[in-house]
Image (cartoon, rainbow, N blue to C red; front, side, top):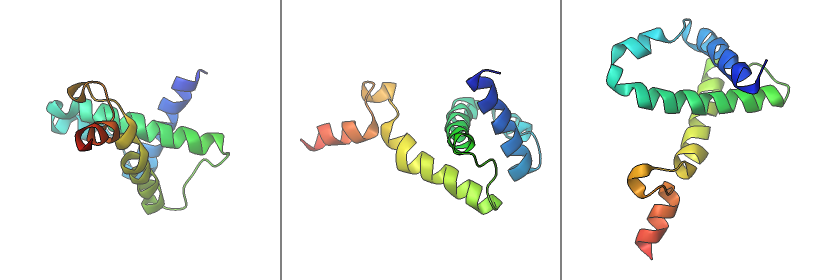
Length: 100
């Protein structure tokens, strides 16, 4: 099984554990959010994959899982991911350039 498949499988397991379903309700709610959902799924997959590599497959609670994902998204992912609207720079780099 390839790494991407393991991440996807872990993501599905996470959705079942945290949301009690497969997440399809989110996708049906608003098709306009597909790109946002894809970003969140990617970030969530990275958090789950890192936890899997560390040898820990589960969080002690839903709150702990949500906190870990929030911390990753707000603490790293949103600061470092590249945005086409910012000239393919990260928000941190863009703000630094504006301040200079």
